[in-house]
Length: 183
Image (cartoon, rainbow, N blue to C red; front, top):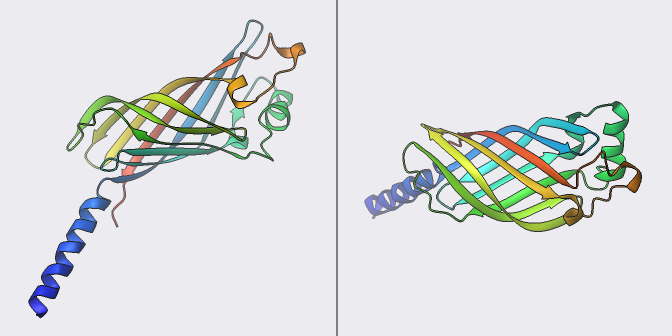
């Protein structure tokens, strides 16, 4: 009876370890560009955090929106936080989704995958589909994604007086380096 108990315990423990090997935690940076007719606005943050589970085919990231730096002036940053993104009211932006394309990544890999999920900005959540470049080497994964969002989709209003200085479509770039979680 004791041998069966140990065998069962070791089997469940081994399964748990195998499951944990597909989970990765990471950090990185995100940048955006507003390329309008009269002005280009660029900002970035190094406060991006993410998780990816290759077995469950899930992918998520989050950013503290007030952590963006750059802009063309301190006043621009202030307007970004207070008027456009209202970061005191909506401090985080998140993506939580699934990898919906074929994932061939049991060993090292380098492939483009498609993720579909809930993207939340400014208190609005929409379903978005993004293309992601995934590169896995040993116990590390690098992710890069370039995509666009339409400000009006997220109820971000731009006053008419500055519409020629702020683009209605914003280009976003996400870079995350993940390390395998060994529990």
